[in-house]
Length: 188
Image: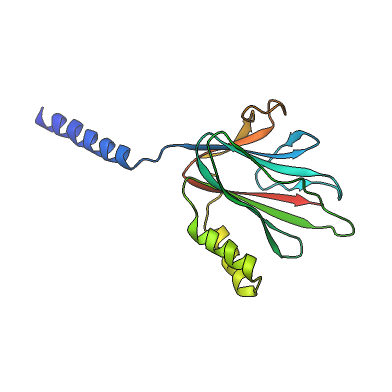
């Protein structure tokens, strides 16, 4: 009997300690919107668009968070589209974006969402804005690479967009850890 009581007591302690360190699930919704419709964001599959097609990126979180959107252009240069704190329930939307002729290639949009400010990423963004040197380019790319893609927890499922009229499956939902990066690749 004592052995069973000890095992039960030990298990309660282990699960209790895990509960102290468990992070609350963080859920956010991401949409690539073209012609007022959300496009599917399949893992690692590029989205194909023609030049001059207009689109935007929309982000919604039910909790306060920090959001960063950085694009790596086909030329290799980096542009920060968003770097800001958003309140729960607010929609973050980029301006309308499009690619111009004669250029064709692939653009990578890095969308980072986090409970806490990503200080090393913000420092890298600020340094790159001030000086687009090779050193600052590498620093920004490194800061982006240190944030994980949402593969393990909930890698993405279709979801309705918080109060949006864009349709049932307008966004992709991600949940799990406190900081995520989603890479959207657009071929044009």
